[in-house]
Image 1 (cartoon, one colour):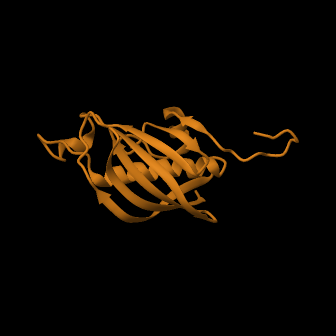
Image 2: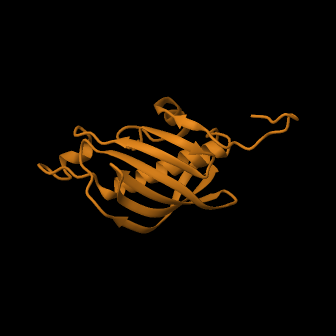
Image 3: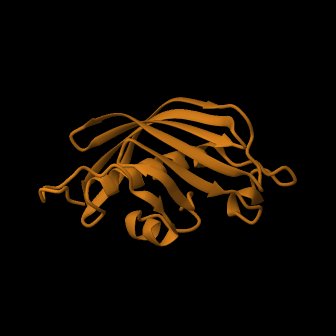
Amino acid sequence: MTDIEGAEAPVTSIGIVGIQKLLSTLPHRYPFLLIDKVVDIRADEFGIGIKNVTANEPQFMGHFPGNPIMPGVLMIEGMAQTGGVMAILNAGGSAGKVVYFMTIDKAKFRKPVIPGDRIEYHMTKIAKKRNMWFYRGEAFVDGKLVVEAELSAVLADA
């Protein structure tokens, strides 16, 4: 994107990243790709990852039979993947790059998530230092906070 004078203007909105773009941005594949799309991306500042939770996902065979509950650690990973998409796209794409998860802090699990729920991972940048991103994540189902955490990741050469 260029401004009137031809110089590069900062990216302020990427919009929506659908499944095809996710697959070309992240190395994750089923069953470990834990987001279906990312919407409302505003550079690396903010974005919302969407996960449609379905009963046929492999984790529900053991977590828990007869009472399926989405594992909290997988929701944290969904947050990390959302932040990773934002960081990679802000850095110009994934060619020759990989995102490594660094830290999880202040994680709180507030309400169980079950098949049929739609999780929204709201990721807000706290800081960026060189090739490291720090995000606050909040996961919502039907407008209710279900999980929150602070995460960090580093973008490195593959």
